[in-house]
Length: 303
Image 1 (cartoon, rainbow, N blue to C red):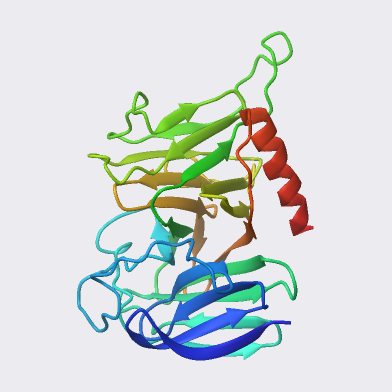
Image 2 (image 1 turned 90 degrees about the vertical axis):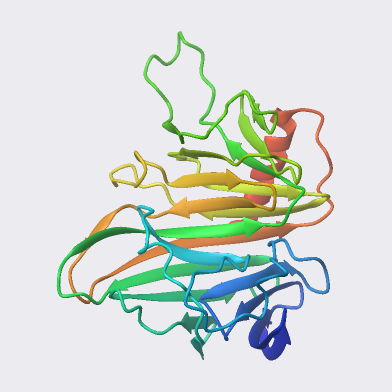
């Protein structure tokens, strides 16, 4: 059964903890919308926290803080980097918790809606952006989970087929100007791409993809964070067509998913949904094929 508690966390006096007794999320209420913590109850946080930013409120400039956030794509300044440094409202409606910050002065209203499974370590997160301006605007809802250091992101390839079986391309893969495919943090496998977070790394790395399989995972120690998201084959996505992106630097690794682009008239909204799953005691696999098989068996827990 899902319950909630108001508490102080990370230097913020007002936070909302949502727990089903197995999994818990902590949402900041002094700033946001931001899910600063995701983990098993009384266990470590899967999300990164930046100690020098915790507890800050009311600043004029943008702070990352860590945790999970909602951005607007395509990425551009200052729109994407609008500071979320002010208190947010929250309410419970049945199984859902709705987190709503003040309307942005640039004419957008954001909202996060959160629901936990009554028993399993599974969460549904809805990301909503409403256009308040008196002109149409074409945007995508961009969902970013900023993972703690020391783990490895795992991204599935499309099903492998021999050249004699399939002549047409299977996937879009997008590179940034600073993407170095020879960097040792990458592993380009037959069934998976993996990207390791390295605290000693000197430069960031990023890729994007159109991922029809619709999941990405982060393995850190013996625990797993996995997110599931949609892939609309008829939709137009930002960044040359990406519905997921992966970024890392020396402090963290981001698992990102995006909605299709949508032109919003005044008062219209866009909504993007993710499902999260946590797993313990995930053992190292002898091969990437066995790892993928194990991860896909865990995904069945969503149904």
